[in-house]
Length: 415
Length: 133
Image (cartoon, rainbow over all chains, first blue to last red; front, side, top):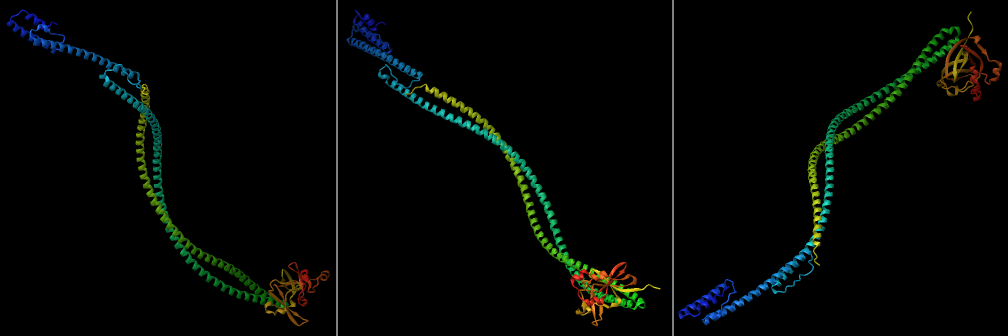
């Protein structure tokens, strides 16, 4: 670059005062131009102090030169420092990248640069390394914990899948059982209806039985009444027979006497010989009659004996009839009481059967609802089973990822 | 000329039937009509079952009447005298009672003929005698 003051000095040599005055103005212009180059960052220009006639301007030129020199030196120093700092920064970044790439976070960052300006940077990089180390440590712990947790999740998911399968199987069996229960409820309802119908028929039959027992008791009362009448008639008959027996005894006695008379007559006739023959014939006839009478009375006695025996038997039978009739009435009363109880029981049974019928119908409806719900639960369980499988798969994948993460984190040494 | 006949009284003592001459009999009555001391029960003919009739016989030696208790007086039969036979001597010797005097054929069946006065006079016989008779 050309020195502006040199140009001004060349123009002022051998000049007049007017030229000198004009020369002074040129020196100032040169200085001004020099300053302008300085302001533009061009510090390589200098002013030649000897070219300035005016001492003041000369001093200004000298001061300008000194200032420019000083500033240039400072700029050079600054540039050298910037270069050193840049190299330190590059070294720090390179060292940090190298450590990160190698995964060794156990050591500390050591740099050859000692510039104080890099101290914050080094401190920052150290903090970054410490932060990374802490992160890696925490990530390692988290990876370990994640691995453990994912293993637990996998186990739990597997268990859940197994449980869900068992649950699905149980629900399926329960659904089948409920289906059977529904059928059984239907059967029970039909049976209960049948029981109710049978109980109704039994009730009707028991009512008929109750009526027949009442009729039986009436008949027993009549039998007892008849037995009393028969007893009285038998008593009368017995008394008449006894009277007949007495009469027959008299007749028998008379016949016996007649027989004796006839015998004696025959005896006398026989003693009389031929004269008594007719008498004997009459006596024999009389005796035959007497014997006939005695035979008849004997038969009558036999008949009376038979009648007595028959009357006695009839009396015993009549007494038996009375006792049996009384017993029958008592039994009929007991039977009526029992039938009344049976009627009550059958009525209760019929009512209970109806209640059971209604209850079993409700049960059947409820069972159908349960079957429907169980089908829905089964469907939901099937979906849950599929979800469990997916969760198990995801847990397995998560476990692999956790293991992978642990493997990755293991690459970083922090101790 | 008609055949001579004997009038005999048929009576029963126990299971056996005997015969007696009607002339030995005074009458026939009931044992209940005769005082008990005058009734002859057990004899050589045996002991009657029922003692229904009493054949009254005269005891000529004592001049009294006694009643032979019998079960039944069957009746009076007229039999030919040829049917009346004395007791054979051997048979008579074997019998201890003298009341059995012979036998009579009644309807072709031999029936012992009893002397009633002798029988009631003999009175009760020993059981062995009665049984043997």
